Length: 496
Image 1 (tube, rainbow, N blue to C red):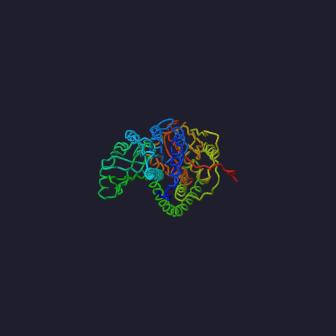
Image 2: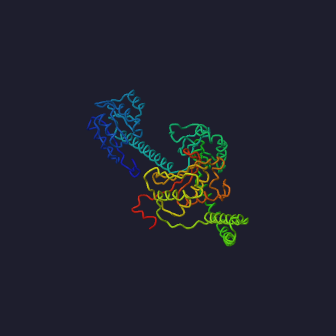
Image 3: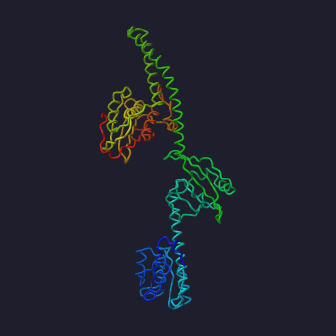
């Protein structure tokens, strides 16, 4: 007897026979086993039934008015591989039996068989269909689990052939490949960038020896995605009849970047406390020196020989005050008041003001919006204004006299994109990864904090910033992406 509790959905039995009495008798036997019978009188009707509803078991007469039972198998074998077919006939023949079994029939019984024999064949077919259904369910569940795992899993045999993979990272197997490509040699599956960077054979051998070791991180430099960091673990598959090892590949790039940011934040907090103390000790003397210099300046005419030295003292105090302000802003950013900021208006105002800056003298600064959008960002307007001021001022100072700086703006989906590009010499390849480091500067008199401050502001607003070379002007290009407010009911004016 079939365990009805095990059947999560009714097992459907299709009975295909033009003898109505025989078909009804088989249907009665099916109902006794808590099965759901459906009847078809010919081949065409049976195929239509299979296409229209899920069928688990088919009991098919070898001879039908419009075809043969083998035709039914030929039509359903590939499209419905889990369908279990039992052949019946009124005329036993060994040739017919062999043909039916060769075609893929599960069993072959004659119509004059005892009911117990017939029920036994049907029960075995149902059990086989349930196993296939369970196997299909397990496959679907396994695929769902694998799809939810962020790591790449490679199942490798002792001949270094990959027999299964969830195809996650391009470096460890092409994403467009299918399971039909497996098994294949591990070395063939791996990209050239990682193939010879690891002792893959040794990794699997150590796993089989019981050494479950976390391997050193594998660092891959990708021209398009930057530096990618993977770590790799290999464990043996215990209890499998074939010697297998499971290689798990985890993309650690974001985690390590997050840890780096946390470390930087902690260091920044320490620097902030130190800078606050230094600022307190230095600011008052600088203010005093500046006041005395201004006083002396009033008592010396412009043609006085000491006037040049006094002017230089004043210029140095201004520079020291500016540097101190940069240090304070970098190390201890002011808390911002959250408000909607119209980035089109902000960029336009920046360019208007920038044209009056000393760094713009002899240079052209243009604002070129690329669409009609007015993206709105939630954040601190003054902080954003200061960040983009640093980017534009850097671009102006990097451009030669007669040079051009362009500020572009557009909206792409949920992001606002602002690009600042110049006609200067650009950033050397060896310096690209250092431009946002604190105190890194190639300009005489620069504090090296402007770009660091800009990066910190952009990231605190949930955005990102990257650097490259301008294809239009030939100099440096800084691209900022910021998340925008999605379809606000009302965006208040910035001065409200």
